[in-house]
Image 1 (cartoon, rainbow, N blue to C red):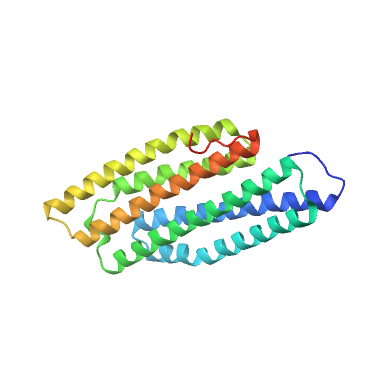
Image 2 (tube, rainbow, N blue to C red):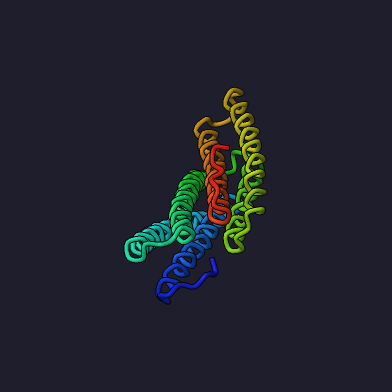
Length: 223
């Protein structure tokens, strides 16, 4: 990662790719954090902010993809540099999908608030799930900055906890459906939100796997 190339602009291009990825990661992190606070505080203004940020997230994805393609075309990168470009390109896709999930969650939150239905369900479990998922996502951004494969493996392991948490939420929400004591449409909205949070964990795990690929040159997917 630290090796220098004959063409100084080449180093600048590689640094720019990494910097843009981290900027995008910080924006997506704020999106997710605001989405959580919107649920916690029944704040439609924060939910709307998350939705508005989605356009900027998409712009980052396009800019990073264009720069990656340009570097490959102009520089014909060696193996380690090509690995960096490929990894960041794939990680960027996962960042964009995390932003999409935050956007969808916030749209549900905004509608539930407008219809005075957010308070119908105890949101404690979903908030706990979301905060843990946000913690993993923050960790993966740090792991990328530090090029820390060991931390990435911890994140992959911890994703199992998130899957178990979602399963418990699913069970509890379905019990509410069967009991007939709650508005089914509201329960389904909460289930949709909980599933979105679980998907954010999956995308975070994907980024962690790509960091290991970047640092160690091994593909651990599906293993």
